Length: 264
Image (cartoon, rainbow, N blue to C red; front, top):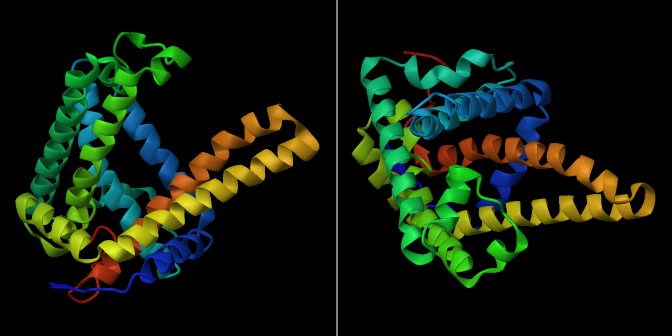
């Protein structure tokens, strides 16, 4: 396994490859993302452990979308089974992915809990759906809620760097969860310019998409069109983003071609 250092402009290439790959298999990749979201939502309904279970599935499901992207680049139609690729690559890797998911869930909950030190728990409850907190204007504009939000996002950046490449490294390189987190952090940091351009590229795509909807609704549909169009547009952009994640990994690490979806 070799870490590649890429120029900053590669970040835009990753965004472009996400679009290109999605439109190779739009129905399959959209369907897989909806299944991903459905699994996360349904797992959250399990009494007692639903939240922990749902969060714990995120690394495995993210890996599944990366495998689907790889399949699409080969001209193949990714089947639903790719979403469980993390658990079909052998007992050792499956166990490592479970551990990685548990670490992800615990760290995420700790980050959310840390915000309670700032605002007494309002932000945490809103994120976790506890006590059905009403997200009214007064709450959103309160200084304590905004401070808690800033703290969460400040913690979320290093958290994201830890887990960005970790599922792929566990699956395709067979490293331990702890090693995958370390290597992912180093890879993101060493390629921070490309990752920043990648992030800004997606921000630009999202802003342009939402601006287009608002302009179009103002011309022909009114506010109702904007409300109707925002949800599918957001889901489409989220799908494109997850599809593009594979390319950030593929250009950053090299050790020959990764195995096909579900390969042992």
